[in-house]
Length: 301
Image (cartoon, rainbow, N blue to C red; front, side):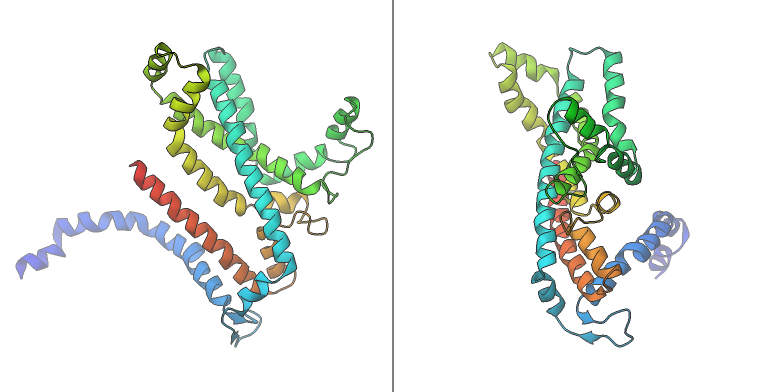
């Protein structure tokens, strides 16, 4: 009995509970701002007239059926697939290119330092700053149209953000510009961790730079690249601020993505139940990706 009592008292107990005391503020904050809202949204998705009605009616999966058969939702899914796939692929290609450029011996250390700052600049700006900057440049009378006309690549001013033909590609380009530095910095760190002996041995065996890239660089970077792609997919599918501040999902749903669709359902149409169902679908997708990411991280360790 004395041993059992000592287990819950004295120095041993103090040592055991101390980490939890340090973690408790964060855990409480996460519960209030993350866990509880998630369960509330999931619950709302199975009821009708939530929030505005004190006694909402349970409708089962009807909200999910309504969302999945909504034409605007299908447009948002289509736009999201384009936005996410193009952004993620471009982030990888551009980030890898600049990382390898900064890791080369052809540039001096001072030059590399300057380029590191320049290439990382987009990552330092907030979404609001990026949106304002690009809205100015993509204005029909902005610098982009001016340069295109000077280079004889366009004969008239193009309304990049208010044209249904160009708006989605324009917003995607902005997101690519804003997101590639994260890839560049992460991949650069990975490149600097690859032993130079591998390249020297490959060169002795007659491997040219292309073969070294495919048989040494990419395999060594594979864990990092998989983690980056998974995280980027989750972040990009949730991208809201950049789209909302540039086009608001328009013109005529041309840039409507899942994030803007959910926002409009909740705060413009006041369809909180369908907005919750839409959010539940996105949560399900992101959860699958999070599980995949966790497994990859576990495999690395």
